[in-house]
Every structure is written in C-alpha cells, then in structure tokens.
Amino acid sequence: MKKKRKLRKDRVISTFIPLVIIIILGGIVSNKISHKEENITNNINQITNQEQNDIVNGLKQVNSKSEIIEENKKEETSETKEESKSDEAIINKSSNVKFDETVAFIGDSRTQGFIMYNGLKDVQDYSYVGLMVDTAVSKKFVKTSNGEKITLLEDMKGKNIKRVYIMLGVNELGWSYPQVFKSKYKELIKEIKKIKPNAQIYVQSIIPVTKSKDKSDKYFNNTRIEQYNKLVKEVALEENVEYLNVQSALVNSEEYLPEETSPDGIHIGKSYCEKWLEYLKNNW
Image 1 (cartoon, rainbow, N blue to C red):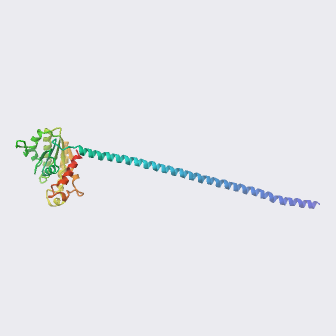
Image 2: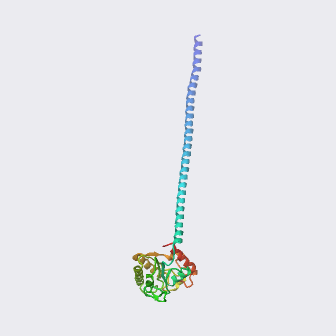
C-alpha cells in the first residue's frame, strides 16, 4: 500500500510541476507579448505624433511661404505704384514745361534746326550759323524791330527771360587750345548772369557725329567731342549751372549719331530734333 501511495504522489508531482512550468512560461510569454504590444503601440503613437508634427510643420512652411508670397505681392504692388507715380510725374513734368518767350536758346546751326523743326516760334532765338563761344558775346546778329543788329546780350537785357539753353562747341573742335574754349564758355555764362541773375542756365552736351563722319574727319569726330564735353561739364560745375546730357537721347548703342538721321553726319533731322526737345521737357 505504501508503495502505491508513493507512486501516486510521484505521479501528481510529475504532473503538477510541468503544469506550473507551463503557467510560469505562459505568464512570461504573455508579459513579453504585452510589452511588445505596448512597444508597438508606443511606436505607432510616435509615428502618429511624428506625422502630426510633420503635417503641422508642413502647414507652417506653407503659411510661411504664403506670407512671403503675400509680402512679395505687396512689395511688387508698392513698386508698381511707385513706378506708376514716377512715370506719371515724368508725363506731368513734360506736359507742364513751356517753351515760350521766357525761354532763350543760344547755339549754332544745330540749334537753328532744332528750333525750326520743333516749331518753337515764341522762344528767344539766339542761334546763328557758325556761332562760337567767343563770337556769342561780341557778334551783332540779332535784329531789332527797327532793323538794327545788336549782340544777343544786348537783346536779352530788355526781355523777361527765365531759362537759357546753350549748345556750343562743334565749330570750336578745330581750335588748337581747348582750354581757351572753356575759358570763353565761362565768360559767356558770366555775362548772362550779369544781365539775368535770376535766370536758370542750362549748358547742353555737344551732340556726337555719325560713325562715317567720325572715321573720316580730323576734327569733327567723337573723340574730340568727348574731350570738349568734359570741358562743358567742368564749366557747368564751376559756374554752378545745369549740365544736360542731350547726347544720351540721340546716340545709338555705339554712341554715334545714327546715319539715317543726318545727311552730313553733323546736323540732325526732324525726328531727332523732336527727341532732343522731349529730353529737354523731361530735364528742367
């Protein structure tokens, strides 16, 4: 009997121990699975959070770009308005300026053509073929109402002149001493100031010649004209008068007077005289 009881006890123990082991292992496995599920859930949450962050960041970038675009639009609109205002100012300036009896032009045959082609009948015309900075002071070529000839300075005294435009220098290109040209130019301006101290004086750049003329003439060429224009600038600076770069409105990309606008390479036709006038209207 004792043997049978022992055998039963052994059987119970042998059966129970595996069950305990299975239960323990099951618990361990369950815990591991639970931990894995928890890790997976955390990973999913992390991924979800990351995606949300990415979406939020993406929206922020889109909003930021939208703000930049809006700002650029505002700036472009502002710039466009400013350009529009600037263009409007130029148009208004051009339309408001008058070339009447209070405006005087002093120059040679180029200025004669300018006045004629633009139909400036009311201005004080002190242009003369071959006129130079020295003869402008002394030459008696202005006709009075009784047929007498006097100097332009004498005629200016009795006129209500508010603006004076001067373009001289082409006929002086052959002078041996360019500094004499500068000295005489300053003398002319000083004399004008004496009789018309409140008048605005403009000295205009000498207009270049055409390419064919430039390559074929010893004196009437653009190298010489450039030298003289530097002297004209110096005169304007030293005498405190306005310098107008008229040539900028008349030359081509090579800095020459276009061949088609000048029959002799020096004088200009109607269309370019009109461009000259337009430049003066926008620069006074």
